[in-house]
Image (cartoon, rainbow, N blue to C red; front, side, top):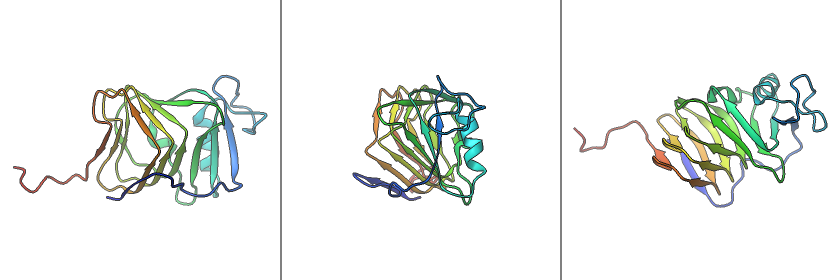
Length: 178
């Protein structure tokens, strides 16, 4: 289990990578996904990004994005996906149910994850949360479980959680446990 908690670290520099723009209020899934023609749903942007074999940036405008299955946000073996908030906005991702998911090659920057369910990772690799917020969760806000590698949480906040804010669980019982 590898976890890095840092003060000022980024997964990679701001490179000129492809961008897919999403606006839940003004977009249309028949659009191109360019800044002047954003998509409406995050699912459509994910599908488009996963078909590429290069780094992809999905830029989220302010609004709430409901996701049924958080594992669908994953990059692929050769695709790294960066989810970033459009400057000056506060996009919110709401997961519809809590379950631990496996995601790989993903960065979140400036995204708010809002309850009631937090984010649970298992066997996940190369996942970065930078300047993210985890708000109003009734469960664990961010759980990092067994099999995870290279998980980085930088400059992120946890607010109003009924459970644990951050739980790191390697799946092993303590030495003195029955």
